[in-house]
Image (tube, rainbow, N blue to C red; front, top):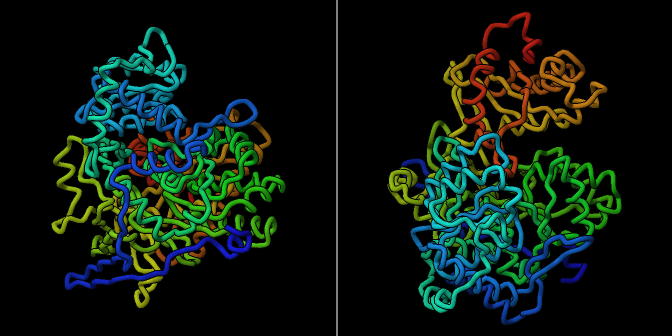
Length: 613
């Protein structure tokens, strides 16, 4: 791709939309572009690139001052070899392989090894091994019923290892020797002979992965991901984003592969288009943000995928380092933000940085979906100024908007939709409506009812929303985004409270570094009581006072605020390792504080970290 075409923005498909308005008030949207033929399994593009460009790098990970990589041909060879090894462990189509590993080449090889022989692979966040308790991890293992477990970093999982060894009924293996645990590189001739026969039986409806939901409404569910789902998703995306084939993707990716975005978008976009993935061992967290910056400087990406928290963590780095900003924005062709809308202030900051560095604003793209839709159901592939625009259905997928709780609930049907949940027929039955649409639990609305081609706007998470005593619905998702935008940089996130109460409250997760700077001390010296009584509390009052002045009703105006004493805990199901807050779990776990928050005003409020507005 020439520099001129890059400056003009990436090539996007023409919008063609079919709209079906039904008598029951629902609206069904379909992309007017028919879904073209796509690979039957993920093994097809891997074999293709191993043949067409065998020596081209597929994945790179950090080693010393640079990168250590694996080519497409070598990756294929290693995955085939490991497939035979997996067959010796007792795994099969009914007994998946559990993977506890950070993103890495060994992790990727193991995933594709399972795919070769029809063994479903379930990558589970290794952050569960660092939690205060291992109850959630054990619960996931028991639901999955794995034939074996693969651990890429034995030292990182050492504390959880006794619980893992008890819960996993089969062998627990590693690619390095660890306290007598079997080395996965051992291969038997019998297993090697089985690989070709097993691979021949792998088809579009073979289960490739089992990815677990966060369990926001109770027990986590294992979402079945077939090859058909994953391949049709990438095929449809390629039709809408033709720029993917015009310049080989070069990614720098930190998003965890235990989630659908990192594992099914970043990896597969790279694979389907013969690109290279640089595995970022940094994170958008204070201790690891420096590593992210280092990796971006080493290999500036031409496409960048992240979540709002990841983008917002990088903005001050770009502002403080003009060299980094120039390298990044001159290289990046498009920036994709998933999981939630990027706050308007962050969009404006990023646009200003890009304009200063390159003279042009970055192309921001977005999409919407879930683990159950592999993950794209809709995609933005047209210019839009609406931060919450989810885009339009991808080819081959139907999106239905149906009246629900005074809003329009969103549901999806297509080849990208899961056939169900792992060994959970009851949850599967409840997930689909009478027309076979998977019910997402989100609400949406047309950006312009008269011109539906302008896209669908996110209108809240129905499962998170609640009613006040007055019967008024509170749109938690939209309210949270607006409040956090107002409170930056004081707070990292917020939980919206007030179910069956008179007014709305917030549980605030303070930005520890910002709070310490305001108080002239260190984060460990601060408590909710000190924050509420000091300059931090004053600034929160001021910011939310300005916010409340712009509100016209009780469903958006904030009345009470409590400052939390600890960050959300993964082991309590309060947050994912992508940084997404589980609102329902937080409200349940902090119920006592919420009771105080919505009680009568008392002299001890500040002493409890509570602010009345």
